[in-house]
Image (cartoon, rainbow, N blue to C red; front, top):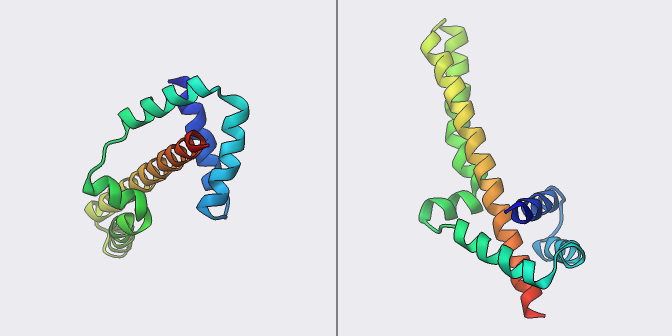
Length: 128
């Protein structure tokens, strides 16, 4: 499990760079090839497939995490605006809750995207 977490961190690091998915896979492929044996790669791939569930919501969040979080950012902004201008503590609470939900959706989408990138990379390595 520690190997999977380490590889997911490597995939998240690759997501921070602005490049194509093919370039990210190629860079990640080199890193995995140097640090993980073929047997461990198969084990990590099996663990990764076991942890990934596919549903409509996870697909939407993985592909469009910012669009999915946008309504909650709007709730946070409006809650802050109405909370300050109308002196309403409930609206300030809505701002905090909206911010937390939006942040968690984006974080979850980021992790799902890293898992998909890692899975694509492991499948690409297995082909060769």
